[in-house]
Image (cartoon, rainbow, N blue to C red; front, side, top):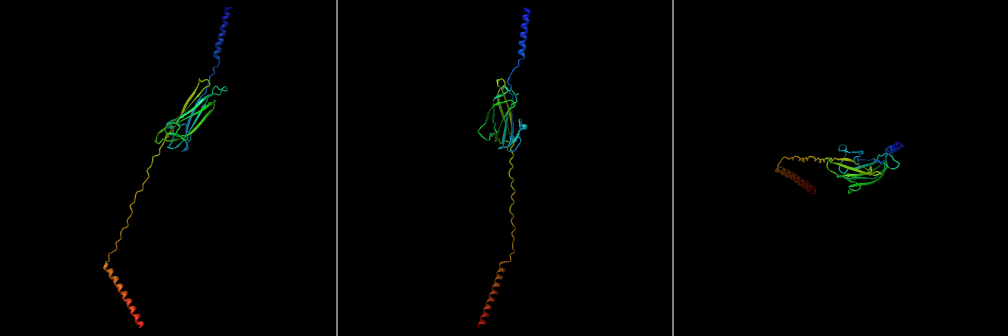
Length: 225
């Protein structure tokens, strides 16, 4: 009888251990992801992930850039909400060299994205203006998110960057045309015929004219007589 009782107890214990091992372990598994890209709106370039200096988007001072941030939950679908990403918050602190178009004094962007279901995503965009004026500078803008799981045992956080490289066109000085000195025409000197000869000629002509006038007057008087 004791042997039977001992066998029965051992069997029950084995069943309990087997059941404990086979029982499924439930856990919450949201999978948060973030992708940040940048586009130079002024030059019309395509939006680029631009995570490194070698893939950086080119920009000049005063260009307008558009940043796009996508936060996604890649967790498996769960009807009970176990894989939801809760209390999701997006944060982006602007680096030196850019400023928000909508508010140049604001340096940090914070948005509460709420709950993101598995397979769903939230997109945010904002425009900035380049204020950096140094050729070759790089502007690295990092955006981050945080989110929690239903059981607070698998909370999520991650960051992504977008890099911009500043290119300043060299200033070309204006070309000044050479000054051409004015051309002075040569002075033509008339031959000197002498003032005495000129005066003599005038006297001769005047004397002849006076003699002619007196002769005409004399002839008229005779005709009257």
